[in-house]
Length: 276
Ligand SMILES: [Zn+2]
Ligand SMILES: [Zn+2]
Image (tube, rainbow, N blue to C red):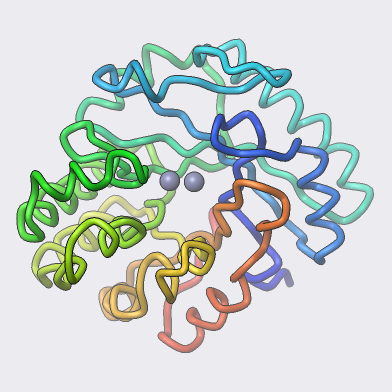
């Protein structure tokens, strides 16, 4: 029986332009820290309004416009390493993290030439095409939207994400905490209960789940994404946790915080229902 903390299902190798570390380096690190399962989840950001910033991947050290062929190479490299590391008791999965925006299903369908992935995280990183998860743009996002407006738009996006039928998991549910405190004097208020509940209900209805993302530890904002309060709400509404993830952007951060996330499952009485 593999324990939750032996699995890391949110990992960015150097195919992501904001990450470093090859797939092999990550796998070596995974073995060295006792992980049994690892899933790579490189960024796929296809919002046409963000052409200038997002739709890129790195291949052989070069930043290139994202193309199905590159995704194909990504998948092949993961499959190759998966065969090698199976001998060392590590299961390696091929996933992606897709940025959610309205209409993403159609854009993804037109982009993807039939590749299948083991695990797909859907994450909301932007409001009105402005990235609140990016230090450079977060202040302008929070300036345009006070807490209430921000939350209305954000949690409406999460409902939309859940209803696409495209995803296995909602990434870093309250990831907005990363820059909110630095951008707004006093930080954001707590999210209105009815908005959180509507999003969690949509996730449950869609038969998907949330991840517990321990990057909050690295970002020094405390707890995990989602926060303890949101995790308690998820437990109460019986929304399953489908994965734990460090959201590592370098091998040094692989697996960091998984013990804490794993402890939360038991402590809050969350349902643990991994997809693979
Ligand atoms: Zn993300
Ligand atoms: Zn990520």
